Image (tube, rainbow, N blue to C red):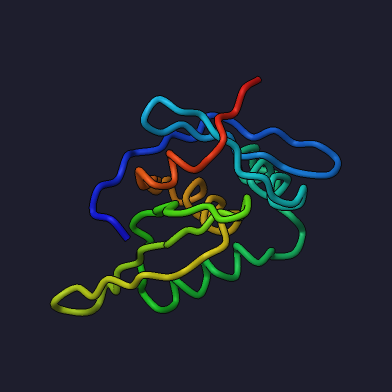
Length: 137
């Protein structure tokens, strides 16, 4: 993975019956990452304070991170191959000295949901920005 990264901003979620699109911008290019409707519904429920009755997978991940004293740091979207995006979630072990950084391969839907819920910075590599199709409304 390259050392050069660009900050990405989350622009909006488009919720449809067959998909959810996360619209992001990086280096003056807007692009969409598509996922299942349930992921978008979960993120929207978090932002509107309408939680599900039972915990969802992202809630489980958050509980595990908290229980292990691990802090989410950032998400880097680093590649797209055949319209499939590849991301890395970076975590820090809060209790280790020196601090240990963990690099976890993640699905974009899970990584973006965690990034939005934990207000994590999102970054993209130049290769990703070059390869991805521009999103046009």
